Length: 462
Image (tube, rainbow, N blue to C red; front, side, top):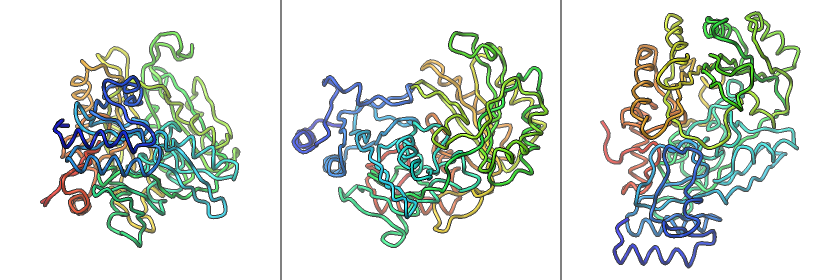
C-alpha cells in the first residue's frame, strides 16, 4: 500500500469504525492475526482488519477501494497460495464463526470464519450433517466457494451444489444477498469461482440427513502389498454411490510420535466412508481385507467423528502440493506413483487417489462454475516443504503429474497448494465457463481489488 495522504487517512478511519480490531506490523497482535494453517506462505499486509461482523467487512472493503489497495481474506489459511507481501489489506474473518441451524428446513447459515467443526457440531444434535471435507478444521465457506469434495461426496455431490444464498461485500463496498433469483450470474460464479468476486460474509447451505457412517482406514505395508493401489482401483469399479473412498501412500519417519507399527515404513492407506449399515460396509470392504492389512480401524462412527476417515494432521505446517483430475487410471503407471512415495527419495511425497463419480459427476439443480465433472479420479501429490525446497518440490510434483497428462481433464483448485500459473487456473474450468467467470469478474471487480489464491483476470479472454 502506498502510504500517501489519502491512504493514510483511509487507514486511520478504519481504527475509528472497526469493531473487531485493526493490526499493523508494529502492533503486538499483528503476528497472531496474520497466522494461518499454511506456514510456507504467510500474508504480510500493511493492515489487518479482524472483522467482527459484516459492517466491519464493508468498512474495510470501502476503505481499500477508495485507494485502490488490494484485498485478501483469511479464515483458517489452509489453502493460502498468493499472500499479500508488504502491501494491501487482509480481512481476517475468524471472529465471524456463528452457525445457525434450521432443522426443519435442513439448512444452516454459516458465517465466513466458521470451520467445518463448528457446522458439524451444530448440526449433529438434529441428526444432520454438512458436506464437510476430510479435515473439520478447514474453513467451511472458502472450502465451499472452491467446490468442496467431502467424505460423503459421491452420495451428495460437491458442497457448492447445495448452497441457497451467499452474502458478499463487493468492490463497490456494498453488502449483497445473492440468490439464484437476485443475481443468477454472480450466484453461478461464486459456487466454484472462489474468492474472486468479493468478501463473502456468510452462506446458507443444505444439511444432509446423516447421523453416522461406516468408515475409517485400512493400513498396509507396501513392501508386502505392492499392488495395493491397483487392487483398490479395480475395487472402485463396482461400489455404490454411498461409498466414498481414497488411497494414499507415504513413508512415515522413524521418529517419536509416529505409531510404532508404521515407523520408518512405506505405508499405503485406504480411506473408507460408507453411508449404510455396518453389515453392508463389511460386505463391501471384504475384498480389500483379503489383501491382509497390517492395521485396520473400520467401524460405525458418528458423523461428528468423520475426521477419522482420513486422519490428517490438524496442526499448522508448511507444505506444497498439486493435483490432476483424471478420466481414468492407467494401471501401468501405478508402480511409478508408488515409487514416488517410497523411502530414499530426496523429499517426502504423499501420493493420493480419490474416487470421484457418483453424485460428483452429476450437474446440480442450479448450475454452478464447477466443471470437469467427467473425472473419475483425483490424483494428488503433497510434500512437507521448507522455504529452500519450494522449487525442488514443484519440479518433483510437475514431473510426476506430467506422465498422467493424457488422462487429465483438469484440476481442482481446492487441492492446489502453491503458486499457480494462469494456465493452471484456466485448466480448472471449461473454456466457456472460464470466459464467463472473467466477464463476471470484470463486471463486479473491474479494478481487481480482490486478488485471491486463484486470481481471475479482468477484460476480454480469448
